[in-house]
Amino acid sequence: MGGDDTWSSALHRLWQAASRAEEVSALADDVYAPLLATTGVHLVVGTRWEDRQILRYMRALAAGSDSPVITATSRSVPEAAVREPGDEPVVTRIPVAALDDAGWPEAELLRRTPGATFVVCTFRLDHRGWASLGVGVDASADVAAVEGRLAQAVDVIVACHTGILQRGREARRGADDALLAEASLQMDSSLDVEETLRRVARIAVPAVAEGALVHLLRSEGPEFVAATHVSVQQRRALEEIGRENPWLAALLARRGEDEDTVFLSGPELDGSPFADTAEATDATDATDASDASHGDGDGARPGAAGGDRHSTVISVSTLRARGRVVGSITFVYQRPEARLPSSAFLRSLATRAALSIDNALLYELRRHAVLSLQEHLLPSQLPVTDQWDLSASYEVGDPMLDVGGDFYDAVTRPDGSIALLIGDVCGRGAEAAALTGLARHTLRTLLEQGTDPGTALSRLNRALRQERASRFLTAVVTTLAPRADGTALLTTCSAGHPSPLVLRSDGTVSEVLTGGLLLGVLDDVSYESHEELIGPDDTVVLFTDGLTESREAGGAFFESILPVRLAALRGFDAAHIAESLTQQAKAYRASGQDDIALLVARWTGVPPGADLLPHPLQLVRTAR
Image (cartoon, rainbow, N blue to C red; front, side, top):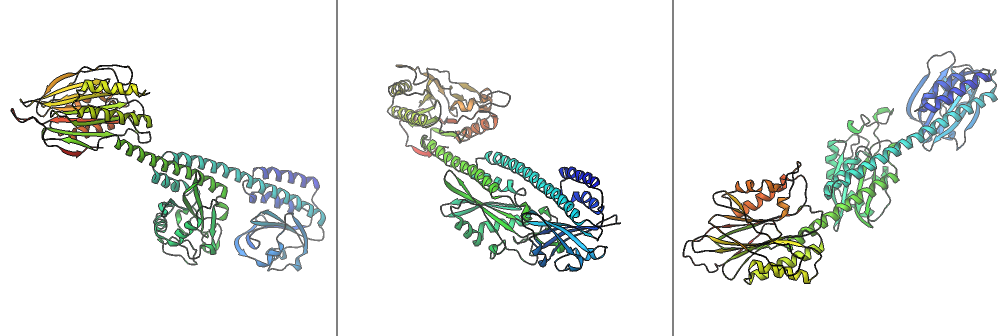
């Protein structure tokens, strides 16, 4: 037989090839040729089996031939099941004449070459299947030595296959980790509940599965939110299934609090919209698993005869965060078993998705709570007579933050005048909200009783000091008193607050020059009043610094263009002016998330000698 030195060299080359191979089949030339060079060997043949009896691949090389005979198939050979090895390789000698074609597909090839004995080593590659490597030998062969060489070659093949699987697992683990990291990044970048759920579905397809459905758990049961599929037609079908299918609804209801991911396939899907059928169904039917966009061409298994479809598998993972179930994600797979994700990966993805969804839900609850509390800190109605056109606008800078400290109000006074007030408490949160309520209601009560603006601010400052308030606030109070000549007297006091602006009927804009120390800092502070007259169609605009401090990308503040923007609004009513300035400031700013509050009063004027006693009042809802 061939020299041991020659075989040793060949074995060394085989180990080197095995360390580089990405597929076991790449070792074929380095295995077959040295074995065929062994004395007495006339044929080398290898087979690959799955599920005990499914022949996937056979390769044979005969002495004197330059090209091997290769057969790729999916043929079931039931009698071959008895050949399946255990955990250790098994070497067998069998007379070629004794081989039964029913269990030995190699028999036909062996009979075509010289040799009376088939020496074959069967071995397990992984949990899904096994393989064999054998040679046909004649009487000149040293069978024991041949058996040794077969065993050595099989050792290399098994080691190569194990290494490939290990590298594959590591590569997949790296890909899974990257996908999980990207999924977390994408999901965490949105605090909108439905958008987060849609991102969960989009991220998973096609990397994890061919399709995905996401449901949110409501008090009345699962609520469908999002579905996606690599095929547009299948996506539409999945959306219908997610919304209306009773089988899926019952499955999700049964899952309840179960934490483990469950996989369903075959008979477990009977009666479901995912059940496999023997024949192709309409493209809009969700049971159709063949679509060119699946990534496997026509949906057939690689090498499968007749264009077989991959059996549909679904998995359901419960989305649980902080001890409560927030929803579920259902994946639909139409791919080989080897490409199904692991339960551990799905659990990790579900955990990340659940946390993102829960964060979005908590944010939504917080946002509603902030907006609701903010509403209760503002007047629901503003007084209006035929002499005054009043309106207000309030824009929350960032609902993710806590309730802000901006406030405003307008009250009628016993002498027929109207008092406008606006203020801003430092900071946000519950303490700021409490101080906001105290400030607004204190000023409102005092002004309704006829207290002048300066005294009202001084008494509020005293109250804040007595309450040992830890925050300061700014405010401005303006009274508007009609005069017999059709003008109105504007009396203004400010406690460290931005000065009001007056838009005259001719389009000019002026600032009400007044100033004073902010509230809640020192005891016994007094405030001076500033008086000026306004005429018919003149408009007074009070605002918080969220308007003026809106900053564009270049660093300029909205304050620098506010007079020009206000002048452009000449002739419009109070509601339009308030809303327009708010929206312009929002569109202007690239940074800054402070709340914006505006209070606008347009003096319509009264004819000379008219009754200046209080007019009957109406109440209109203020802008929020």
